[in-house]
Image 1 (tube, rainbow, N blue to C red):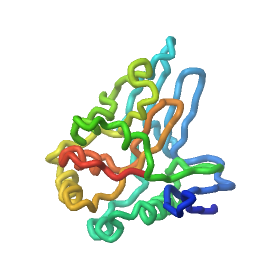
Image 2: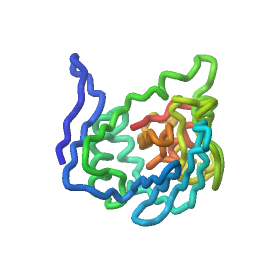
Image 3: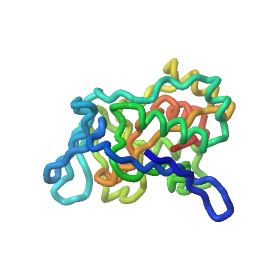
Image 4: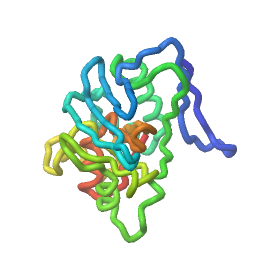
Length: 217
């Protein structure tokens, strides 16, 4: 595996490129048959989906079997890496590479802190309102609406979002106020036309509860 920092002409860091070989079967894998999709993690079904016949959206069903491959992130690590998406990218890259149940497979991947999600919030909408609106509702089942939300880069949690008074969220809310919150790790899946949360459900909930912009990778 080869890592390469991606920079602009002026040297500004924008991402980390990962080039993998000889990793043919990822632990978190997408299977398709016609208009049906299955997301499986080490043979555990975590998400089932079917594109509707009119191609206007996707019905999905979550199984509550998804497990993050990222270990718990300590508050002191958050403080040490605060404000450095480059260092966070290298840390998350190592988690992705080392874990047998991550989605990495042979090919080129990009970890970046730049996302259209950051640019589309209207000035009159709070961070809490905007980021909550980007979450796709429904548990265990729901619908990704391509007709209404085409190319809006919405976010689909792989497990239910915790409440603002959840113990993990409370701990992260303090970090959100201090601007030391670790990034939320998202995976863009074109077959769903949305992001999946690979790690950071509680961190995103904390950012929404504190109405701050969550750091993303």
